[in-house]
Length: 126
Figure 1: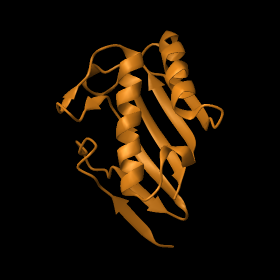
Figure 2 (figure 1 turned 60 degrees about the vertical axis):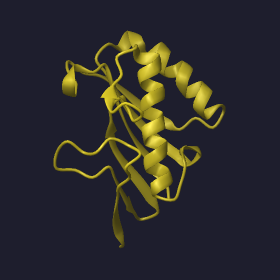
Figure 3 (figure 1 turned 30 degrees about the vertical axis):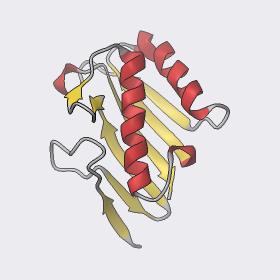
Figure 4 (figure 1 turned 90 degrees about the vertical axis):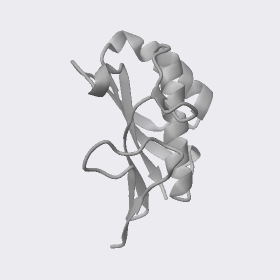
């Protein structure tokens, strides 16, 4: 089984011992992304709606670097520090995916890196 680490300058660089994504066995596994606005390099703190959009922009850049796209996303895992913010995530998902919604899990967590409100990882077809 061929395995390829994926990296792009158009998404946040890993801040630890992990790859932005790994392409293997016909899928791309994107590591958890946080809302770093790549135009500024700063974590956006403009509310979960905007943060979710920024994260999907970063996931999209990584998937493009892997030769695929968000349209081929099959699974998301969403981590929220307040499950009440799921309504904002739903709005963005409906905007981004329309009727082509991927499977997903949503988990409320007590804390995320750098005290952000949301983190998302993804799996897409390669």
